Length: 160
Image 1 (cartoon, rainbow, N blue to C red):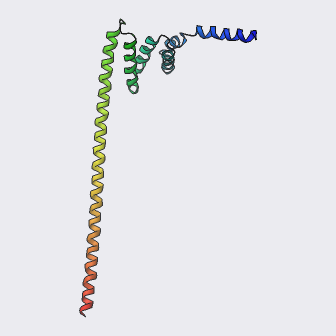
Image 2 (cartoon, rainbow, N blue to C red):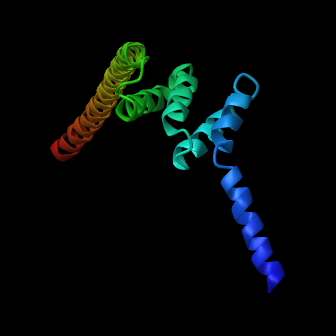
Image 3 (cartoon, one colour):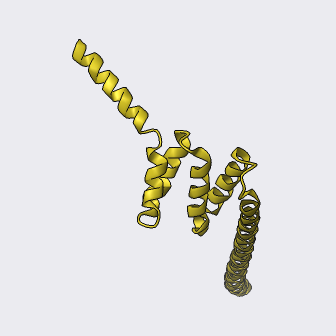
């Protein structure tokens, strides 16, 4: 029983010492393994381990990746919300505004591309529809001629 209490106490002490590990681990991984640094900063944010700075570091990492611009915007906003009086708040606000413009431009371009793709698809569908109508008209004309010939032959046989 004494050993169990000692083991629990040792585990509690070890967990207290690791409070700042996620943020520090993220800092140590910057430039070496940015994916692992991102994960460490997210863990630090979740664990409330130097949360404001972890938000800032994570946002900085995401801001360099076009696919992660929404994450960068979110975490810059979170940083400004958590630390509105930070000495770099003005710089971060400007960076946030630039990222929002960049993201809006990307969305606008993507929307335009989608509209063009949709218009091209509609044009192709209309062309295919027109082609099917032309084929249908040709088939009806052919059938009409065939039926007229049959009618003409039937009338000739009746006249004989």
